Image: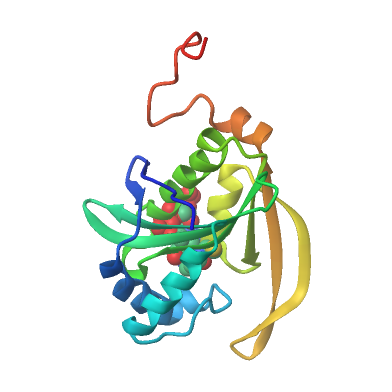
Length: 194
Ligand SMILES: CC(C)(COP(=O)(O)OP(=O)(O)OC[C@H]1O[C@@H](n2cnc3c(N)ncnc32)[C@H](O)[C@@H]1OP(=O)(O)O)[C@@H](O)C(=O)NCCC(=O)NCCS
């Protein structure tokens, strides 16, 4: 697993996960409000089993997993995957504790994650894959600047009906156009790298 390090947003901080976080991850994944949005990453399981899964993820150097804190407590996690060529980043999971939804944590954490992708790693592209009825996630990614590039019809079966799936992407140029002027930290002086 690549070390994502600590990334500070305005409301949230993405940090290295610790074993004690796993129980909360497990609880969220089991929550129907979260399960509705995702293909199941891992079925709910005993925290002991999660430790094994955690190790499994950690084996792949291209995976990046963060815990998300707000106000000093754990409120979510994010999991992504660096492409083999090192040019892009797929956000596979972004989960906020359902009891903490609609406080702006999801957007703030997503913005911080994109800083990592574009400003820290200087990658070319970020992508998301979402169910088409995921209103909250769609709001977040379109506000960031993602646009749809693929639409799968009736891809997943859920709650007795099929649901579409869409893929969205944002490139580095769009990121810079939209977000260069707004930062949580002061920009580097123009001659800082000379
Ligand atoms: C998607 C998710 C991370 C959003 O977290 P959150 O902390 O509630 O997000 P925010 O508070 O930043 O809200 C983001 C925007 O979505 C809107 N929103 C939140 N919940 C919504 C809902 N159920 N329906 C429609 N819009 C919603 C908010 O009003 C906000 O809009 P604004 O920018 O106009 O103010 C959270 O709902 C979640 O964990 N869902 C399950 C997992 C998931 O779907 N992950 C994303 C796919 S990887």
